Length: 387
Image (cartoon, rainbow, N blue to C red; front, top):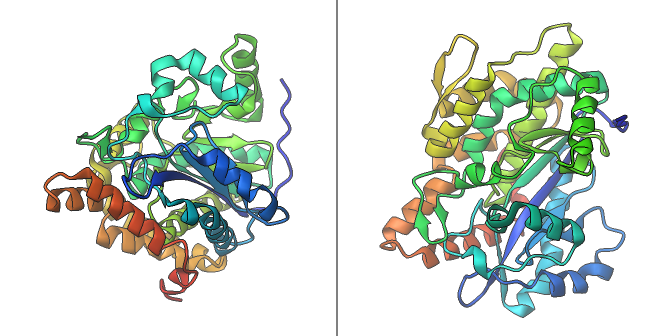
């Protein structure tokens, strides 16, 4: 199978943010995406952003245009959320984002009436119906298809860092799971989801796709659901490992981290270096540790099995790679990593709220609604990160 990797400007950025719709009175998920999208169809025409539906009718996805900088993409997302609120506020629908809803039940959710979603549910059954998950996707442009798979493989080393920073699903269907990111382990139950196969070049990727399509595993490349994958249509590498981010500054920080990592690895490739990888058994263990312990995880960072506290390793990477962030004009957003490390990722904040409320998960939902409303509506949140 021949798959063309579209031309793309190097290190450009695109963002996708999956957002929950919740009833303003109860905090439970609200299956009202259809009416929200119907109202926005005309008013969003011609904008850089898009607002679309997702697998479940309790979800919308806001997507940026192609940004020369992270700030460009984040501003698109902020504008999209602002536009969505023109339809949701009058309906007493609240917006929030996390990897999971603290107490919603899967069997009460409605699947969006699209053929692709019905086929997914028909095949995956109980696991598919359990996909009450929300995430972010970060696209970074790559100008040379020869780089794509080597960078995907090297980025896999940093997936636990990104997963820990974004972890926001400590509750599932009303229960405390003991995991920082329960979403990470639920999502990998789908066929073709999870860690990427360690393919060496584009020809091997095409061969993989040919095998998958020929045997009926998938219909096309869009059904590759790896934690980090090539996105041939856009000419990007797409990181999909992250839980839904609860605030806009956190989304911006993680997006900047992804952009800087891709550019860093791209430069290493340009210099003729072999990009760093670790054995797949270490990658699998790292994913589990980040899902279980979040920023408290000790992850394996090299082939020798060296283990580091992931929060410390993020700090070191942030200091070492900051000059690239300066060059890419995303240093304000990039420095937001330190705020996440200082105040705790969303999973930790949710647990604190739950404990203070004697386990009342309704209060956790209200906390997430407050966080989301405080962030995406004010563009000066980015400026507050400092120059």
